[in-house]
Length: 110
Image (tube, rainbow, N blue to C red):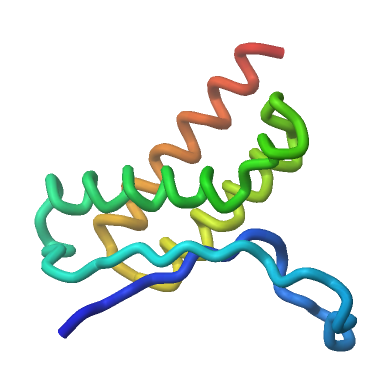
């Protein structure tokens, strides 16, 4: 059975439907086929693929060669949504640990 997870850039509309003229958020499918979500090595590899995909769907490089705070926030949301959708304890623990480390690094840089 082939399993795919779609990462989408941007937030889901919380109010009225988006206007027809607004572009749809970028999406990228990441296959989870053959990934043993009980194997720490496999989960770490999947996390790396999800992280890269989140960065890709939120990359504003075409508009600006710098990574903006909006790009980073978008990638963080996309990765969080993907991890939540998979609902795999090892993946969630890896994500939580990485997010916690990122928060500590941000505080040290300030």
